[in-house]
Amino acid sequence: MTLWCGDYGEYVKEIPTLMAAEEFDPVADAKALRKAMKGFGTDEEAIINILCKRSSIQRQAITEMYYKKELGRDLIADLKSELSGNFEDLILGLMTPRNKYLAQHLYKAIKGIGTSEDVLVEILFSCPYEEIVNVAAAYESMFGNPLIQDIKQDTSGSFKRLLLTNLKKSGDSVVDCGENSYLSAKAQEEAHILYKAGEGQIGTDEKAFVNILGYAAQRRRQTSAIFQEYTQISGKTIEQALKSEMSGDILNGLLDIVKIIRNQPAYFAERLELAMKGFGTNDDALIRIIVSRCEIDLANIKVEYERIYHKTLRSSVEDETSGDYRRALLTLVGPPSVNNEVPAPLFFL
Image 1 (spheres, rainbow, N blue to C red):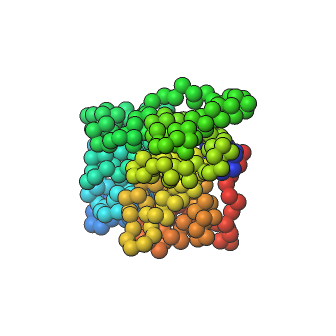
Image 2: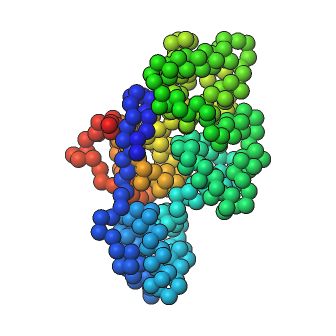
Image 3: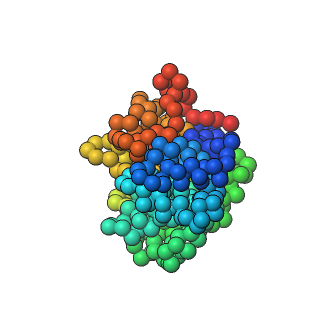
């Protein structure tokens, strides 16, 4: 898969750290997992070596074989009974199909203590629209309410409109595949709309920003061009304009969207650093990002993390975690760069 990266003006190849095992035997893996959990004690290393080195599709096949070959035993139930703490959360996250896993975190962000607006933006604006449709379907199946309904009930104002706009199909998504001349003209038009809605008048028309940037995840290349045109018109970056015109949840949400469009791997690198820096570790965020990105673009995220923070993601995880939880995370993160050198900025086509 490829992703538009505004910072580099190129489509980049998304590179995972976890790929399907070439020699895969789900029956053997199921039997090995049962052996690791049967009797006194648990062989956590065996669990890590199997489940952290298989793709999501392979893990689902293992679950099916575990049930068939172990006389109806439920692998998830056995894992829950044998594991605990962050290690349990990580392994169970890996065992959950991606659409359901993201739906779980959306539900937690909406229905938990307070609303985690940053998590809503992280998930809803980093995923392709087609995937969000599937996540929304999983959400309704799992929790009984449509995702749109719960967002309406638990958010408000311009931030609510921003999320709801993202859940609609953009009629202009074809722009990203159009001719450069058309893309540029459309970007100029929308940049002028944003300028007039903010700096070009007294007060701010937040609706105009929502109507344009709410579709950013579906129009990455086009939105990146809008940012460039805005600077030509205003002399300011879009970030500077947003900070001067807005505040609160809508400002934070829009700034995160800009980061995603400019450089999504760098955005996730920043999210990982925030999860680990300072006193204590936000293990929920650390697990969510590594589990949800390891089969998509965690290799890209590692590169950006090293470029920005001048240390490896692996070393940060080692410093902030311990035990089986650490070993599982490090298996998903993968080996360090050769000779500890920071690699090239991104992987281009």
